[in-house]
Length: 313
Image 1: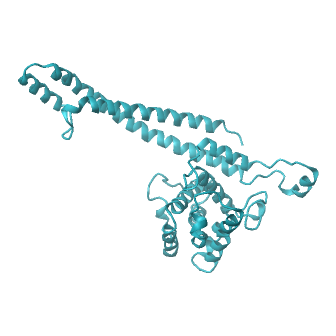
Image 2: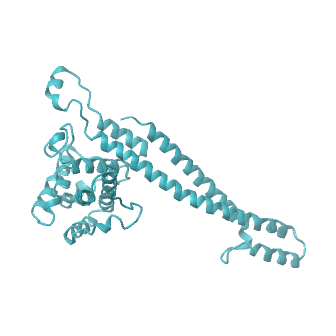
Image 3: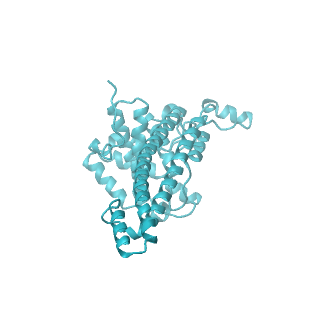
């Protein structure tokens, strides 16, 4: 029977019972900056989902997810001036940043409990066509767990809002990744000979990227369900407030105090204890606005799914 995980359970990833040593290292990452630790969690989550969609065993999924948790471990020793720089890195700074792969690898190899997961930190920036780092390895030399983590890492890095860049939409991010999955254009004969073995390869695995599409669609569908539930709640709230507004409108034009008091009590029958009868029009306006905004967002999510399904790798 195929093993599956409830990825929408907030404790699913944590339920893997990461070793105390690994938890300590992750705690250290908390001290770097909020972006790095959030990135680490997100990459591990996406990696786990990719493994499940690829049909990997539970054992490999747990192993690969743990590698993903540790993939940026080496950043603990990258100078804050480089790691947290708000602008584009210089060539020299970028070379310093790239050393986080080798540093993370050494950290893992020097600790018996971390050693099994050294592939995550070391290989996650290698590219199938040999253009990655630290060793410029090609497809058959890159561990599959690192290929999966690379796709998760790249997607999260592109879409996340950082101190040095703004948010990039899902479709634009996937188009960037599609470009990275395709082989580079061969400009001359010498390049064709030089890159013969990798001529049909891009930086990332097409199969893993296609699975990422499925993960994103699944997440989007889940978000639609959750947002639809809230929209239905808003519909009921609007219905309730509209019923109270009928009495509110009568109360406003009522001439006698007794009549106004009577209508005010009728209004209260439709309101919750903390709601003010005098603010019924304002409440109705706010609920209707919230309903409209969320319906528009759901429509955008449906459109996003359609666009993803049309993408070609």
